[in-house]
Image (cartoon, rainbow, N blue to C red; front, side, top):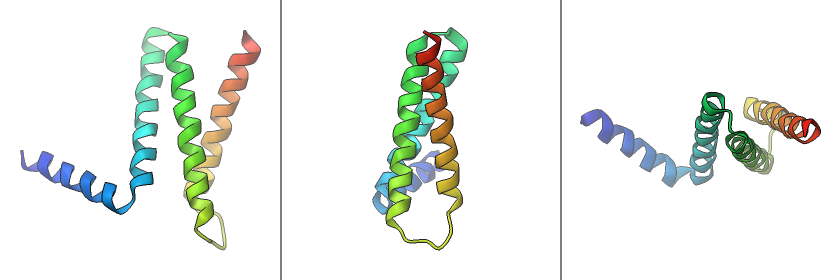
Length: 98
């Protein structure tokens, strides 16, 4: 019980300190669940919704990181860019395969 209380307090603290990061994390976690459902059930709707959530979260991360000045690219920016490219490739593959 103490671990759950600590977990929820951490989530509450993170949501007060950096709300966009919490939303982006939830979007990416939900997209992973949807990709898992797509693998298990092979329903195209799960794949498309997972890709949409991934693209939205990556775009949000890139905008948030662009607003903070930096001399060199942060690892978060690099990973968000790679994830965005992979997701857009997934969309292109879906559109061209049909």
